Structure formats: C-alpha cells, structure tokens
Length: 234
Length: 234
Image (cartoon, rainbow over the protein chains, first blue to last red):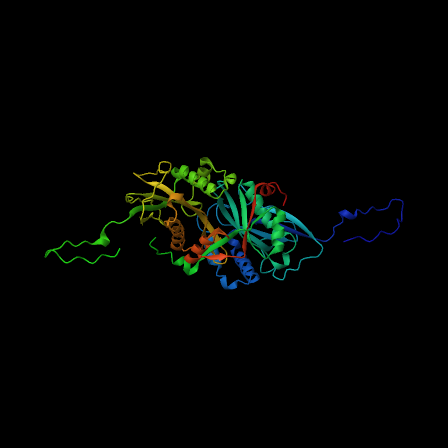
C-alpha cells in the first residue's frame, strides 16, 4: 500500500517517514508441524474436501477411525519411517515456539504478507490448538526406495491447501518442507504424480527442478482384481 | 499327450501304460522367500544386472554396504512394514520346508515343468543355501498409502528375473506373490510403473486386472535440485 505524499515540513526538524518500514498489507503467520492422532478429525475433513475438489467422492471411503488406526497405529514407528502427515496451520498472531522433540525435525515457521486479509468461512470447523490457529492444509508422504541409489526417498501421496488459502505460496511451502526433510536426512529422491493436462502444475514443478517422467505409466491393481489374489494357489 | 490306440491284447493280462503319469519334460522347483542380510551380495548383483538390462549403469551407485544398511538396518522393522525383498530361488530337487516364522508369510513353492532344461551359465555366482539352489530373481516392494481408502497398499519398485529364467512364468509368480500378500493383509492397492512403449508388459498387466493410469505422470526431484532444499529458508 503506497503512502500519500507528506505535507511540507512544518518545522526545521521534520519527521522522517520510512515508508518501507511501515506495516503494509496483512501478515499471516504460518506453521508446518507433524500431525498427531489428535488432528485426525481435521485430516479427515481435508481429505474429503480434496475428494470433492477432484470430483472423486465416489472413491472416498476413509473414516476418522480408519485414518486413526492406519496413520497412527499403536506402537507406531518414529516420524518419517512410515506414513507421515505435515499439517499447515495459520494464525493472525505469531506462533509460540513448540518443541515436537524429534531429532530430525522442528516445526517450520513463515510469515506471509498479503495485500488483502483472508476470509475463512470454515475457520470454526478447522480451529486448531491455540488462540486463533486454523488448519489450512496438509501433505501426506512416506518413504520409498531406489535400488540404483540404495537410498530411501519420500513419495508424496497428497498435498492439499483449503480453497481460501490457495495461490499464496502455501502449496510450495508444504512441498518444500518435504524436500528439505529428504535433503536433511540424506535421502535420494522426492517423487509424486501430476495429471498430464495440469500444465500450470507441471510448469511449477519443473521450475522447482523436478523432472517429469514422460514415458512412465502407473499400474494399479485394486478392488476385486486384487482380491482375486487372496486365495490364489501361486 | 494323447495316448495312441492300443494294439489288440497279446495276452489276457496286458501291461497298461499310463502315459499321462510318465515324467515328461524337466521339473524346476522354485521358492519365493523373504530375503535377509545374508542375501545382499546376490541382491546387489541382481540390481546391477537390471541396470545393465535397462542401459542405466550410469545411474547405478548401490554397493553391498549401502544396500545392507538401508534394506536391513539395525533395529529393522518387521517384514512388510518397510522395504521388503522377496527372493526367487530355483532348484532341480524339491525344497525342504523352511519356517521363516513370520505371522503373515510362509515361503511359496511352485514346480514348473519345462520342455527343455535350463542352462544357467552363472549358477555358481548365484548359488544360494542348499544343495543345488540358485537365486533367479527378486522383487523389492514397500508400503504405500491411499488417503481415500485410508488403507496401506504395496508399491513395487523392482521386479527382476535373470535372463535364462525368463518367459517361464517366474515374473508373474513374483508379482502374484506381492498381490497375494497385499490381499492377505487387507491392503487396498498394489501399484508399480511401466514404460509406455512396453506394450507386451502393459497387455500382461491388464490381463491380470491392473488399470493403467494413462493421465498420470511421475515427478521426480533428485540430485542437485533436491540438495538445493537442504538449507533452504522456507
């Protein structure tokens, strides 16, 4: 927001206005932290919104209970060794520092300055711990493996940012958080899939330095076709 | 084999020849079992042969040591919860029953009858435990996750069968073993990738009931592009 030109100085010691230091726009404080079982109701709603966005609600069958037992099982393994969820939270006030006490990860903080405030019609539904903290998105990923490198990597299954928080850099922030974690752990690759007609996303990924494996096709065995193997006499 | 019409009986008690019960061709006994750290030298050679076959030796950097530490780390997790290798072994004599003592898996045995014997020029290199047991191939897979199903699945990173054992059903046997394991564990999907010009493989997978996800493209962040995220100030 440009400041109006000041009037002529009324005295020999005019007030100097450092325009660059004046607050302009609206600050949104954001944090990426590891999700826990307490976050499952929010994760469930986010996945459902993703299914609606992708017009795939007929394939959506997750429940809070099935998410809890598969993402956060009893005797669950340490973060990053199995299915892992980073949660994106936003707030109008700075986040207190929390220590999630994992050797390999500390929550990531970023302040985003916007021209206009964000109106979140679902703020109450996605209210998280803290004064005005709201869940805005998530990324779910897990280890994969390259035999040529003899190294693990990460595969990103889903990235999702709620509608009113899009086009503000939060998707890139979530993707970068996974890439940074992989690099920090000495992992060899981060992989995910994109739809071939989503040219904006492909351009964005290529600018990040990702290769698009044009010749590869994903094969999927599921439902009855998979079930047919259950009692097969191999 | 159809039996020829018998000549008129020369005596009241002719010898009856049950041709269907006579041994024909050559039996190869095969077994799929979970690999252990002892198998790493063989796994390393198999991965190298795969790199040669795919003309990708410039991307091959695995060593026996790096495979051991990443596939079979100290405090390794139970089979199927992380990176898992099934090893295919063959023998000219039946395998003794072994108990790998895992609640969810017993070795899979199959006898394959061939018209011609297999000549294996690398039998000594791939000699395994047992009298005449030879390692013929492997499959490496690990859990993946579907948020819509709220279920784990398996992702198959590599399937490889040594050259002299190809076109005898062993590749299908390895793939089926992973699918059967997924079905047995109540998992939702088995996924892998195929090159789009490999029409024979695609036909084979479709006949198994797999869908080929035509619109999806795999994105990969690796090497320097990934390393650039290591110290990024997100």
